[in-house]
Image (tube, rainbow, N blue to C red; front, side):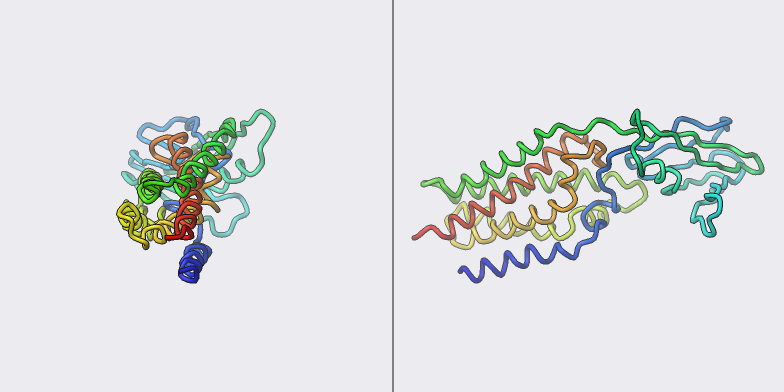
Length: 287
């Protein structure tokens, strides 16, 4: 049994080690210290709209004019990769001028940027700013620690420990599932099922393992705690390297609100580790 636990835990740890950020966040998005905002067009052009989308990660241009719109490249660049938007079309892109503005936090927590366009033969400038909101409260880390302690305590219950472990596992599973569902809604131009897989990554394996493990643990089956341990490790290890920054970064790419996502991440990270502790405790309990 100990060798089997060790093997499954090793799989839970080593599989996510090869995951790229795109496998950890829907569309490769991640939390950030700042957010881009579009102020307006100079001069305004009827039918042309530009705004920041995906929590400032990209700009979106809707061309409602009768003329093509060209996004001018950065001076001196050879290949810009920036779009030419036909009349009636929409384009989204990550602009290097916005990225450069976000690279260094200035005094006052606000920096200006601009993106030049050509509408037909007319020059137009997108005026914008990069804003650094206040950091979230460090109390979110206490929520994660509290989730760890609460889940781990399931292993110390004398009666109904399997039921307590099952409940803790299902809470962590639900928290991670809702985190993935809301994260996958943020990318604008990608299929939602594909973004679900992108946001879940290898933790996708934890959903069936956690559900089956919780069911078996509640029934007193000896395989239940083992499956709960593996599921908890998958959730915690996959979410820790990337989504833990949600607890410290003010800008969170989540469709249903940053604080809700912080709660979900805290429950998944802390609760997942706690489920591992509780499950191992039950596996080592005699009889």
